[in-house]
Structure formats: structure tokens, C-alpha cells
Length: 287
Image 1 (cartoon, rainbow, N blue to C red):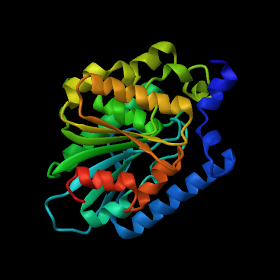
Image 2: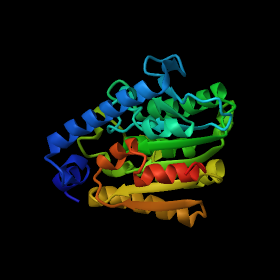
Image 3: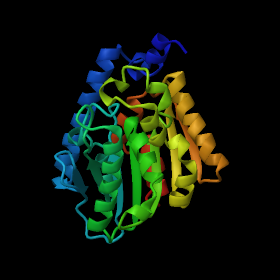
């Protein structure tokens, strides 16, 4: 594929049918911020909880006002091509989940150019370990990641936990409009601040780590979700990863979400009646 076409395929904002490319990104940030503000008004919050010593190694916790001991927890890993967005606008999915006694944790990580891919992968893995240590009483742990965050969530599922103090039992994971093979983006604008070499891209590509995922996360129910109006290349990334997981005998389903683009597919998790929200609650036995 020629460079211009590759750049276009990996520019999700150019595929939205709702508005122009620049406008869709502005609207996306606005929607996430508003959803997060709403979540902060509804939940009890713990903001900037450290999970490591680095500046960016902090998370925000959205806690339901409940005495129930049957509390599920979802860790949300934000997108933004590993170089944009933060945990500050990543609490929005707590809005419909708070009422259902679900804790939501929004993870911060050190985006590029300050952070590189190896660091970000290490950070999200350590954030999961930290959450389990702090919330050992939860009844179920779930992951949700969008775009670059779906890549990072898949890397969490593909962790060799023998190097860590704990082996998480992740019951379910939602990988929403993710990138699972990093090689195609090496020659695009996305890699300019990341400066990934081929070696770094290969070792951080979930598509290369399916045997490790099978070893570490065989009990996890995985949903690979893609937007109807994601680019053909983004759709192919999800389809091929889904097929690889299915061929490995994993518990995986593919959700092709109608009438969504790369941004609305995650923005709508603020809504209790949205297809993916209902699917997540059903997975938790909360529907």
C-alpha cells in the first residue's frame, strides 16, 4: 500500500460520516470530558492514585455508593494513538456502571514522545497488578480499551505474569477498534513521536503473542469490537486478531457495531442503553 493510502487508512477521523476530520476529534474530546465530569459528579472518586513511581503512573477510581460486596471492577485504558488524551477524560464509562455497583478505574500512562511503547506496555501491566493488590475483594475484573488502549489491553492479556508478584484473573475484556499488529504503522505519521523500530513493533504486537495470551488469559471472555465506519485497515486489524484468537480456541466474539465510527463506538459507553454497555453488564451478570 502506498504511503498516502496507508496514512489515510490509519487516520480514523477521515472515515467518520458525521463530520469533518478536525471536527470529529474536537467533538470526541468534548464528549469524553463531559462524560468524565458527569461520572465525577455521580461517583465517589479517588484521583491520581499512584501505581508506580513515574510521573504518569497514576489512576483515577470511580466508586459506586454501595455496601454490596459483589462489586465488579473495570479498568479502562484510553486511546489517542499512544500520544494524545489522558486519564483526565477517561472516566465517562462509569456513568451507567455506577448504578450497577461497578467500580471503574481509568489508567494514566506516559504517552509519546516522553514515553515509548515498551514503557507504556509495562505501565499498563503494572497498573493492573496495583489495582488487584488494592482491591483484592472484587468479584470480577474486566478490561476495556479503545484504539491504542485496545492494543494496550490486549498486551495486558498477553503478559507473562511469572515476572510479576501476582497473576490476575481477568474475566472479560472489550477491545474496541484496536490495532493489534503495529508493523503497518511504522512508516506512518503515527510512529513519528513513538520512534518504534521493527523489533519494538514486533515484540509489542498482540497479533504475535496469541500463544502467550492463551497461556495467561485462557479463561477470559474477549469481545473484539469494531465500528461500521472504521477504515478498512482498522476493520481488518480487528477481524484478523479475532480470527487468530478464535483459531487458538479462545472464548472470543466479534461485534461489528452498526452506525458507529472510530469515535462514537466508545463515546456511547456513557449510555446505559448502548449495545456495548449492555453487553458488558450482561457479561458481568448485571443485566
